[in-house]
Length: 253
Image 1 (cartoon, rainbow, N blue to C red):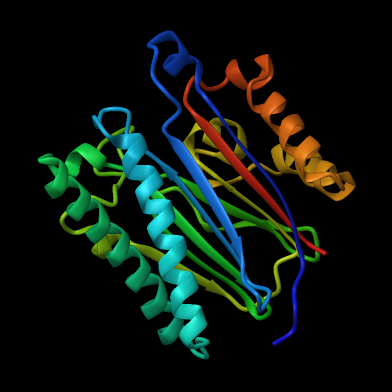
Image 2 (image 1 turned 120 degrees about the vertical axis):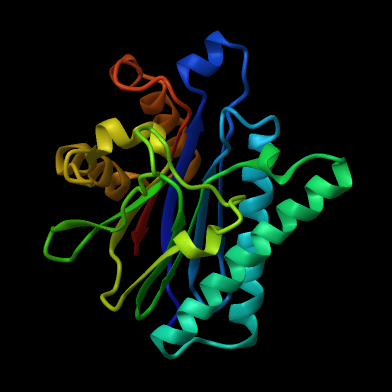
């Protein structure tokens, strides 16, 4: 398999409403680069109404990344069906991990409510899974922005889906792309008012264009993450959203 190299700059920031209410940031992200070159990304947003939402997000991200990594160590999906089975397995396992943790703590699984987005960037394209209102946005080689996994909308206004739902796998959105990814962004719903055209649930290119230009010019990941944190906590961003915010920017080198 062709070895791939990636530049990844990522950050999370506490929302102003969480600061005002003395609540921690309940967003979590994680990445792994496999020896064979694939990049795994996961982002999760613990529900603010859930007592252990932040813990649920951390458990979901950790388990999903481990599950996908372990599966890819065993075999390489060669068909859409195989990719869908791999992603479904990861989500089912992540939900089982939340259920087990809840039982051991004497709590209800709903106390660990969280969204979860998982993406695998590989030589042949992208596999993306989503439960909830996080999102993935990709910029094609032609400069076109599209969202393989746009935010899910729940049954009611301002509601979404969570991994802890009894029918979570029924709402799992798995999307596969066969074009190689050059640039991508993965983010939680705190950035949706800026990053998405909410009326059509499509990407808002003016938000991403300077971010991808910044990513192209960044060679030091640590300083890039600091700059991204400053952006996420800026007055410009906080004027549009008071929620926790996570943004993972990816570029293929």
